[in-house]
Image (cartoon, rainbow over all chains, first blue to last red; front, top):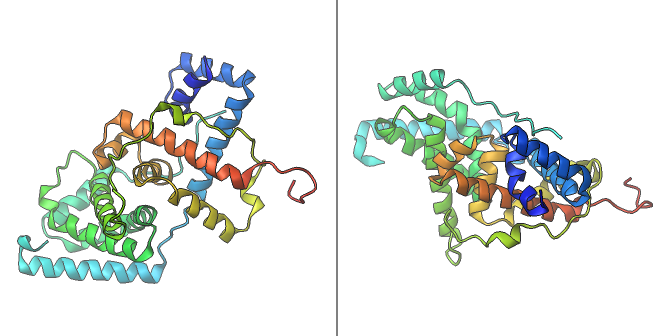
Amino acid sequence: MKCSDFLQELTNYLDGVLDENTKTELENHLSWCHNCYVVCDTTKKTIQIYRDSLPYELPDDLRSRLRSAIMTKCQQHKKRGPQSV
Amino acid sequence: MSAIENKVVAPPVTEELALVQAAKRGDDSAFEELVRRYDRNVFRIAQHITQNREDAEDVVQEAFLKAYGNLAQFQEQSKFYTWLVRIAVNEALMKLRRRKPERTVSLDEEIKTEDDSLPREIADWSPNPEQLYNQSELREILSKTIQGLPPGFRTVFVLRDVEGLSTEETASALELSVPAVKSRLLRARLQLRERLGRYFQKRESGDGNQ
C-alpha cells in the first residue's frame, strides 16, 4: 500500500467500515510509515476534539423561549390554514 | 488503532415515528416533544454553518415551523430527524447566502482535485493537545478553524463527526451521493487536522508544556 492509497482509505478506516484485508494492509502500512501514522493519529484526535467540545450549546432559557415561539407560530399556522408556511 | 467511538446515539425510530404520526393527526404536544428532542442538534448545526448566533436561533424557529407546515409531506420510510436536518441545513445556507452574497454558497461548490488532499504538514501533536489551552481558548481555536472550511465541507463534517449522523443519513440530509459525502469528509478532516496542527504541534522542551 502506498501513502496515497492509505489516504484514500483513511476515512473508511476511521469510521470502522473497512473489510478485513484492506484493514490489515493499512495497519501494516502504518506500522512502518511514520508520516501516515501521524496523519492518522492526529486526524483521529481532530475528530475527537470537535466531538468532545461541542462549542455551541443552547442555554436553557433561550431554549424554552425558542420552543414557546415555535409552538405559538405553529398554532397560528394551524388557525390560518396550510398555505401560510 | 481502533475506529473512533461514536457517542451520539440516535433515538429508536419507532418512538420517533409514533410522535410524528401523532403530530400529523394534530397532536401539538407530540410535535413539541419532537422540538425538545432535536432543538439542540438543529441549533448546533445551524450555528456551525452560519457561524452566527442570531441566525442560528432564526434557523431553529424556521426549520421547525417549516417541518410543522409540511408534516403531511413527510414520507415515513425515512427518519424524521434526517428530514428535519435537511430543512435546517437549507435554511442555514440561505442565511449564509444573504449575509455573504459576494461568495457563492452551495453544497455543490467545486472542490479542488485529488492533489490537495495529500497533507503538507506532517508534524506530530502534543500527547494531550486540548490541555495546552484553557477551555475558552480551545473553543476559540476550534471555532476559528472550522470557520475556515468552505460551507460544503463544514456541513458534512458537522453532520458526520459532530452530530454523529451516518454517511448514508448525511448523504440523504444533504441530497449528495455517498461517495461525495466520503470525499468531502476526508478533505474536511484533513484540512481541519492541518490547521489545528498550528496550535497543537509538539513543542520543543523548555516551553513548560511538555
